[in-house]
Length: 454
Ligand SMILES: *Cc1c(COP(=O)(O)O)cnc(C)c1O
Figure 1 (spheres, protein in one colour):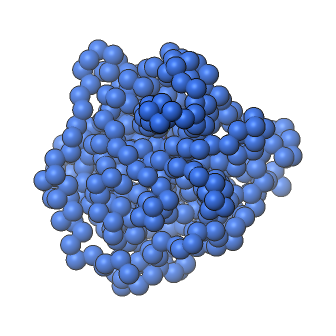
Figure 2 (tube, rainbow, N blue to C red; figure 1 turned 135 degrees about the horizontal axis):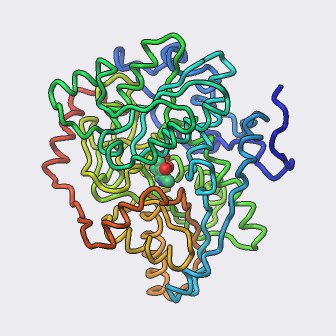
């Protein structure tokens, strides 16, 4: 098959993904078919996903082998470093030990290639020649373009209009890797044209862009759809992060008391956290915290029930925390956290009390991102700045309680393409958004008439 292009030191890159579904005391309610309201079967998903990913989506096998061609690409940047944040510890004057897993060393600058590479590989293996997808801030679109060019398939990206206009360099990355990108809502799909007819100056949303990308895949024989978060198989692929972190921490002689990640659709959080859940189940006291923006407070203020993954209502109904599929979040700088829904597995862990959720304003997050950049060197993406905010809150809490804790968090990506956001913060122009309850109630009206959870 493929020749070994990267030095694959056996043992250094994980050989398998960890499937948390094998170990959870209970599973989230199943996805439902939007037409029949019955659980979706493999045949319902086959028009837009390859069978190997559909199998992973429903699998309850604990370990799933990572194909060698995928591991070879991972070896370009994996294992990623686990850093002890000595600079940040010093800046905070804390005896707590803070560790972070740094996923910004991937070619696209985030954790997202962990799944884009796997998805492009499986699609190519099943003869698919083109992938369509959506992207919010552009991280996912660029990660998929990178993976597609590696495996020699085409990539079409529907990019949320607000980011398309404000993040031109993410577009340039997609072009450089040979992908095609249009602003969403676009005139290229019926879903996009319908939105434009009603709201010609729409700034778009992930839900709208997903509708467009799903329609693209469903109406073309040569094209499948690819999603960068939320679904079980995406979270599965991200578990290389937590597996490596667990081993690296053991080498450092440390065990975490608190694990923290930011959540948009839930994938980088799940990737870090899931491999540690067995430790928690075995009785180790472990607190797990999901950090989200106050302007898009899916877990902390959203409704838990069945909802569509997209705006037009074409995807299966997922059991998740949701702000309603019509929700258009404020134009905060964490483009990657502006999604109305949440991974069903992450929602389920919050519902069952295994995971705590917290929401933060963007200015307090950027304040911590700047402190982090000065202490640690790396400029964090706006998304993981929410995780850093939560870390600092935990440090304060440990100080009040008079204890020393070991805190681990996921630095899911760097912020080198987000300097406009840093400029806005540093010049004092950045503003906070407190989502009014009326807006939440209005968005929740979209949920009326949808099936209830069992
Ligand atoms: C996309 C993205 C996120 C949010 O997505 P999740 O699926 O919740 O991880 C967070 N951080 C970075 C750097 C991202 O690119």
